[in-house]
Amino acid sequence: MDHLHNNRSKIPNTLGAPKSGAPPLPKLGILQLQNRDVFKHEMKCPDSDHVDSAVVLYYQVGIQSHAVDTELELLCQMLDKAAYTQLRTKEQLGYIVCAEVHARWGITGIRIAVQSVREPNVVADRVRMMLAMFRKQLIDMDDDEFSGHVSSLIMKKVGASPNH
Image 1 (tube, rainbow, N blue to C red):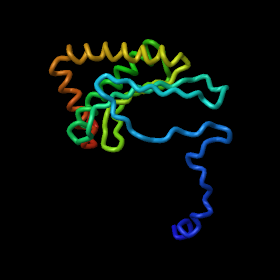
Image 2: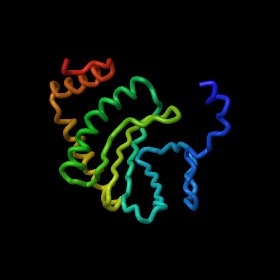
Image 3: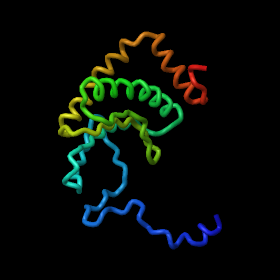
Image 4: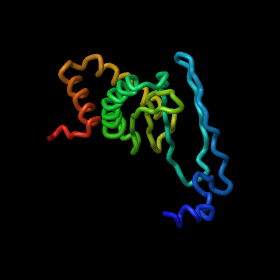
């Protein structure tokens, strides 16, 4: 360990460095959106042989707290399964589909990401349609099913498997 510590200046500084000729990475920041405002960022992949696109929809919820993050984790636990089933399995829209809590700089929200060979606008529209279906599923969900999701999240948080 001391050898690594004493020679750390010899480690090449390549982490996060863009490839030669690649456009610079966007600066990191956070933007507060007003109710229903949309911010869209598009950029071309520097590798013209790469035909995939990625669509990330982020729904900003607000100030991060344990209570809000826990509620979002419960929501995303259900949403991730619904998104994967609808977009990946049924529609075969993308080969990477996920929904997760995304928190940065004290602001939290839900991020839904899909990697696909389809056009980004088509993918984004299908994600929004899936969200409308998911909303109906949530409204129609009975108390027993909802309690099962709550129990599953509790088990995940305390580190126990529901099969034990």
